[in-house]
Amino acid sequence: MTALRVLQSVHGQLGVLATAALLHPALLLRRGQRPSRRGRWALVLSAGFAVLAWSAGVFIYPDYRRVVKRPLFHLSTEAGLLFEVKEHFAVAVVCLALGGLVAALVAPAGERAIRRAAALMFALASALSALVVGLGVYVASIHGF
Image (cartoon, rainbow, N blue to C red; front, side, top):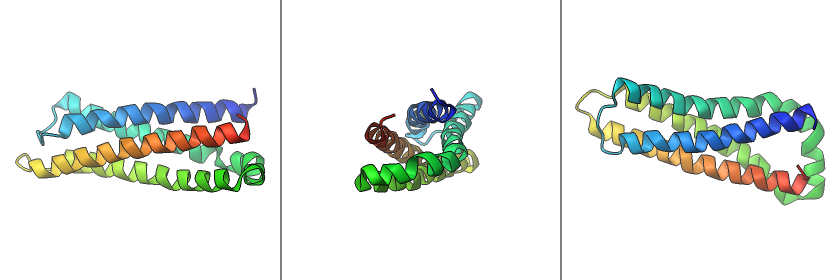
């Protein structure tokens, strides 16, 4: 197995982990209650997994462009375009996760609506992350990974 394939696998596993981890803060904050100290750490870790998965993708992107992207478009234009969409959705996941994190952590004690909005951001980030993972699996199956 080549180093690129190993890194792609790690990137994919981090994406799956981020998808699951982002659901926890959505449930934690849905009632708008202020998170405990432990809960705040859970929020940070959840957003951190999303950033870590995205960062792994950024790390392997130069090799991906050189080795995978052009052949992928030759095999299937649809798969190539879906991968481009996947990249943009991944950025949206990170933005939603970080936005939810900031909203949850800086919301004043009485502002339940802000924490409920943060819960929605985390839920959307988790759902979009699941879509990103699904698109990644589809594209990998087309390319033969």
